[in-house]
Amino acid sequence: MTDTVPYYEDFTEIKKKIWSMLTNAVKDRGSPFRIPVFICGNQSDFDGRIVVLRKADETNNLVQYHSDIRSDKIAKLKANKNAAMLFYDKEEKIQVRLKVECTVNHENEITKESWSKTQHISRKCYLVDNGPGTESDTPTSGLKPELDNFDYTKEQSEEVIKILLLFSVKLKLLSGFI
Ligand SMILES: Cc1cc2nc3c(=O)[nH]c(=O)nc-3n(C[C@H](O)[C@H](O)[C@H](O)COP(=O)(O)O)c2cc1C
Image (cartoon, rainbow, N blue to C red; front, side):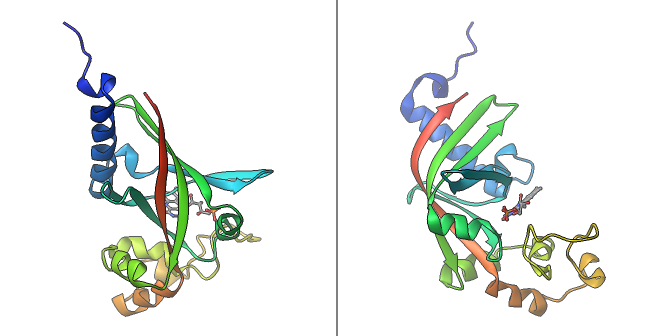
């Protein structure tokens, strides 16, 4: 008996398996692939951070996540659109490393559609007064107390579309497995 599975040995099966894990992670909050590390930067300054995978589209070879337009990574991506995403599933023992080319979507149909699918709870992160990574003299969530308690209306959160940034990340290359 061997515990080898088709997606260990066959390139077509490997690709199929990876896309099924990416697609599943968009729906499954418990999937480890749901929170990959996104790495970008220039020649002398690279930075990685956790993001939430919001879309995986095999047909168009792209993945997406949301971010805040005020984030420092925008300037980095303007200077260099090449980036990387790293996923690991401990149970499956599968690591996926993506080399990606990033497109920033802002205040367009893509961001509107994606925002409409976002749940009330997830919108909270975008209601902060200042952008992510802003220095503060005191520890803070960045949210006013009423917002911290989820006390905001759909209309208030609709305003947020103006600062939502969406990366459609085009997968250029798929490398690394297990
Ligand atoms: C579980 C988790 C999910 C996160 N999801 C996102 C996300 O989808 N998009 C995002 O820009 N930042 C997300 N963050 C915050 C980033 O990891 C990072 O702290 C923030 O973006 C500020 O850094 P940056 O501006 O360099 O990206 C998440 C953090 C955690 C812990």
